Image (cartoon, rainbow, N blue to C red):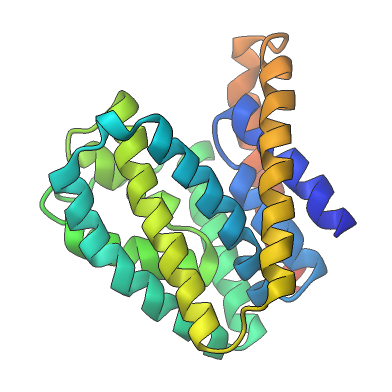
Length: 235
């Protein structure tokens, strides 16, 4: 629980200051100390609460036709991913997290980009759901997919939050249907959500004193940290 509290606070600070990477640090950090499946399940409630909050804040900006198509793919993809994750051995889950960390590093450090077709929302949503449930890396797909659909600003945030909330609901359902989810994990997820929110406030204060030119360096440091945690967990 102490590790969860510290990592969740750090995740909130990192996401607010660097703009990305907090969720990855939380997941990969937890998976270094505990079973990777438990780490995946623990982050589910925390991330669900965060995305539901964003949906409420920006509900007027949700692009409903696009959101429904994403949800149509994301729900079964996440449910299947949850069921598969429970059945996979630890080494395969950890290997998937290493792949996720490598892709995140390539994106930030090397500037690697991919542009999916704008009409791929349903299969793209399914991929987001499955990957999130098995490695936590659905954000690497959702960002380019939403951008390719012409979204930006608040509609980007709001529509992405709808898809993400759906993913977390259905991946938790998959974990639960396979008999792996329990009250302790849900409690840990709630504690994580509270600590992430607190970390967000801490990061907001830090953001005001950190020069803008330092932020890109922080992004690089975050993804390299994630890669190191993933490789250490695999070892």
